[in-house]
Image (cartoon, rainbow, N blue to C red; front, side):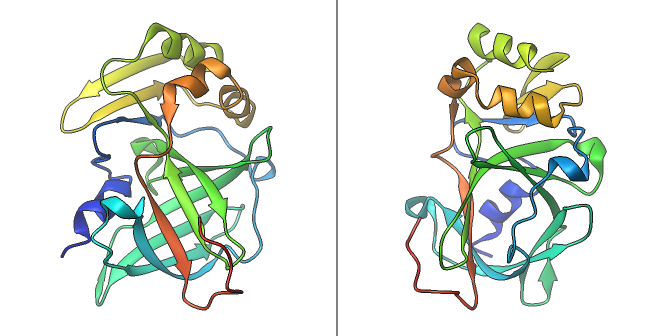
Length: 208
């Protein structure tokens, strides 16, 4: 199927296949329900496409978001009778008011990855995956991660490049990390992600 490559890339069983950059992942963070944001109208039926659009074959598949309790959502992609393994999504409001999406496999041992999440007035959502520059993490990035709760930072050059934060980060750790200028200068959210477009838009909306 034409869409299988990008779909497989965001599943946390994972592959983490996101272009030339190195994906940022971590052990499953320690997030309680009271730490999380539960936007109204997030659960629903969507068309899912690659983001940004210029790297997509523009084949849309189905995406279903379900609220499963404790301010946690389950995202499942499907094409016809085929369903992918679900991804759990938790949303954390950062200090600047932006939303951070914490995406994990239902098996917490497989860890988590991160995306900046924006909402359109037509009910759509864009997930911009947090990448770091290819290659072993710089000293600046390593030190920023260690300042905000990392126990260690591992760099994997297996099938895909991955910078992995070891240790269970808290909501406070993540808010501090995403407010740290050294960290923000080392990450990129423009290269990979996905868009969820509602099958029944609320309004004409504005594009993201």
